[in-house]
Every structure is written in C-alpha cells, then in structure tokens.
Length: 284
Image (cartoon, rainbow, N blue to C red; front, top):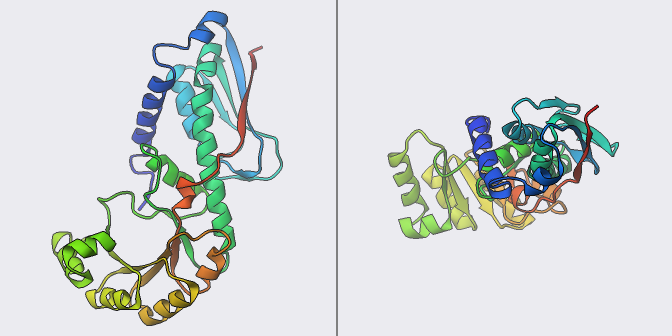
C-alpha cells in the first residue's frame, strides 16, 4: 500500500477546509495595513533538529492564495537536519497572500515534521533488528493521508489506510462474532482478497488465531516474556505485530522478541510539533 494514492486530492481538501476556517472572508489585518500590490519574500526556517515534512503542504497553501507565487524547496521533505536554524524553503509573491497563509502553512509543516521526526526516532531505536515501525489509524481527523506520508518520510511503514483496505479483527469484533475462528471464517468469505489480521492478548487467543489461518497476529499489550513466547509459538505460520503503549524506552526490547513489526499510535497522536518559522520581508 502507498499513501500517495489520492494524496493530491486529500491535500487540496485539507487546504480548502483550513483556509475557510482561518481566513474566512478575508485577512482583515493584512488588507488594512498591506498595500494590495506589495510583494514579499518568506523564508521557512527550521529551528530544531529533525526530519523535514510538509513543505508540499506549505506550497499548496500559498499557491491557493496566490497562483503566481514562486516556491523554492531548499531542503527536500524527508531530509534529516541537525544544523539549525536552517532555511528549508522560500516563497515569493503577494505579501497579503503570504501573510494570510503563514499560520496554516506552518501548522501543517510543523505537525508533519514532528510526526516524521518521532517516527525516525523509533526507526533508529530498532535499527539492525529488521523490525518495521508501523503507524495506526490514530490520526487527526482529515489529516490521515498527510500524516501517514509523514510517517513514511520518517522511515516508518504505513499500516492500513482505513477500514476499507485490510481486515483487522479486534477484541470487540471477536466478542460480537462469537470467537476468533468464526470471525476469521466470516471475514474470508466476505472479502476473500483482503489480508486478515487478528488481535490476540493471551496464549489461547494466539492458538485460535493460528487455527483460523490469520495472515498476521497482532500481539496486544503483552510483556516482553509473553511476546517472546507468542512469537516462538507462531513461528513463520503468520506475520507478527506487537502493539500497545510501546514507547521509545521499550521499543528495542520488544523488537528483540523477534516480532516482524511494531505498531505505534503515538507516531501520529502524540508527536510534538517541530519548530519552524516564516521570516517575511518586502520583495526587492
């Protein structure tokens, strides 16, 4: 799966919605104090070390407000930057447009760069183990496609995009369906072409997941010893994924159990925005 499917359309929708929220019928401050024909240059500065992401979103904001704006990327998305402050992009165009789009453009790039940076920290923490770091559906409403792209830029891998492209049978599904084996059988019949993943919290549930023929077993909220035992039981009969509050302090130990992947909701729901700013001056 790739998050670039539908990305341009998703970005356009986000920019349209957010500009409607922020600019509304117009930026009354800029319209009051900035001449309509004034041009300006804005330099995007990265002020904290991290992975740059969301520069394309910034460009989309400024171009929506000024189609003639000139946008120059100085440091491509996905670049790890340590020497800060560092200019990463530059925009030139209508001063009113740049000022109107400044906050939204920064909001998007700061959030997405924060996600990419946190993902990179998790990826670094499991380096050499062969374990993949996965995202989840715990994303900000409306920003999922953008946030999952940021995860990929940070070196992580995207889990399912939504409820439509893979089957993940969790505890509540199991309770309603009458057990793991019954739930997997029903899922196979309903959508035979989709991969099936089953959540398991105990050794008994792991055994049921194996009996059902699940493609992936999600080992949920297990300690390291229990994880290691579950991975040994499963062998290569199914792919294994660990999940459940796995932070940077624990992730290396979890990776050492032999799981194939670790999913981390914090990549998107708890990432701290990376510090960027826009320095604006009158265009020469």
